Image (cartoon, rainbow, N blue to C red):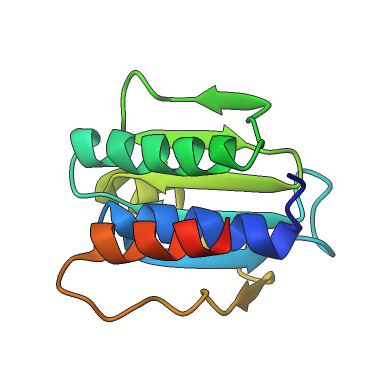
Length: 135
């Protein structure tokens, strides 16, 4: 199944949300970088949560037939980068995110609206239900 960039972005955001990612940001990199068209940036509160967020993103996109070109930083869990060619997902711990400041570095990139996230006391169950509906 071929998903559009918008659909893959939505899957990434919902997968991250399902693992209670904080401060999810989507940047439009198209006019500013040849690296990727879009960045999804988020954070977890611990290395274990950072890994869980990255695992959820990878798992959900693989279910749609999307495999990453590369995944880096998984062993340390402070900054995991998942490269889907035109979409790059950055999952940080708070200290590493602050230090590298991708939002500051790419401050001229437009911040896109994050796909609407459901208001729920159980983000994992709600997000997974939405992902199933869209698949």
